[in-house]
Image 1 (cartoon, rainbow, N blue to C red):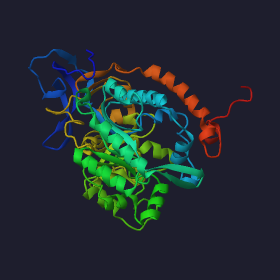
Image 2 (image 1 turned 120 degrees about the vertical axis):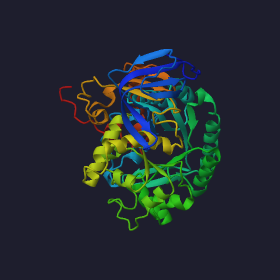
Image 3 (image 1 turned 180 degrees about the vertical axis):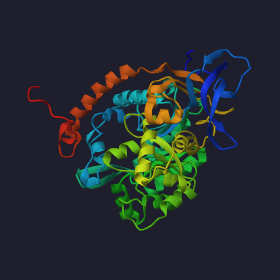
Length: 489
């Protein structure tokens, strides 16, 4: 059964006799295994979860051989940008900037609206194929974005970005800022107009998040006004905070306090506020700061953290450590801040790096990371109807094949999925009751066409690098290939 995203569904579907369901246990306040169960949904809402559904059914699916789990919630992604960097950013970093390549890359590699559209289509497909049903899409607005989000079938939380300044890198060790305070407020106005226009679009699948881009690129008045606008609309707000040592040093120089402490002083820490990354907090070994207040400020205000371990691991960075944040009472969600947008692989990185940084196998568990990937993300977005399988929740449902060779033996299917199979086991995905991934293929978008177009767009992007890079370098000088060409080539 395929339906057009945006049109209301009224029929009842039952996944009958699933081998294993990861169900929400309201009494325990967490996920649990429920074997040999039925799950029924009418339209976009789950109406039954348990043994032996006896109600009327229009569509019946044999759940034998499947692990049924809730659609996952990706609370931090840049789909319109990151796929363009495949083969470019994996080993790109600047030692004089504490290993991060963020600032140099943003200066040297520009994207066009058409390449943004192609990049986002690729990323949306990757997310769907790895079991994501809700994404926070943080992008510079571009033509076709709204149409793509609606067409994808995903539940998209759209974050049109704005800021008071942009980064300027004149040499390998210095970060400067080109300020345009009026432009920042114009950006906020345009973002709110776009967000306000989402009401009722695609049956409510498309919503908004207020997104002042970074704490170091936004003025105090802009951050305060953005937060007030989010509160007034009962919307979440997100911004990058403590994402690099360079940012930490810059904010300490400007304000005398850490980035998290500055956010607290501005009054923007609250339930519904999501800090992008929050890695380099006051207790991180790389910053050698004297306070130990940041985690308390995040936890006590109900603020959430979007944890995206992969891009930072490539620089040699780690959150120290995610299990410690969780024990401290911080609500953690998971994001995909780079390619691939493979959400299950991101969960694996979070688990492994959380144990390495803590030097403790018990520092964080598979169950805790799965919670972060589902209800943790939902909580960050101020929602209780996604990220869980329970009566009354949205019908955002993922079916993983227990017969997949990477899942077997499926003694503990969640561990098999996270540590072994990842996206290879994902066969079917329903979002808002619609079948958007069928037999491992995205039904709503053209993944292969988008990939072919992306290769062309990347070549054009690299051709422009000497004109954008402050030192006039070619792309291969900034990010050489992993191997040289043979002299016989």
